[in-house]
Length: 230
Image (cartoon, rainbow, N blue to C red):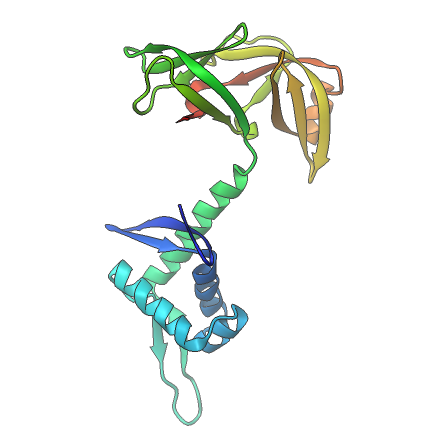
């Protein structure tokens, strides 16, 4: 992802091509698909018509295929524009990337230092006070590196008792906060000098009686964690 004057640009892989698309260009394509008109789409997205044509030309050049096909109308009308197969693929890929990013806007961020590296099992081990956290070894890391650990609240699940499973990151904690939004409850869990937040449904909260002060177990897989070297 890069940044432009029209917001962040996302790299989309279209066939064997890599194309940059921002929200402004996405909206232009979306309204062409909706209205069947470049003129109406340019007006709706507040893009000058000539600029809209240039955007489409540049995107077609990058993709190696036209994104829009235009048919001229006769005296009785009947003309219009529609997205090509490539144009529709642009919409689909952009929506996929945007949806994934929206889901992961909020993440748990933990700064730490790499304590151990197990090359055979492709894992990194960091210590958070007395807790050992197992992370995936992806990239060039070494013992002593400062890292930022990112954990999505959707990748954390809660249990009332420790469970035997493939999950190796299991920590006991206590619920210190909760907030309901659109039937999703965000729980703040104190696991000892570290607070993590996890998302559960209101149904799950009621079934498990997840209220303030409740003791729970935080669980997350190593594969679900992103690690960034600082």
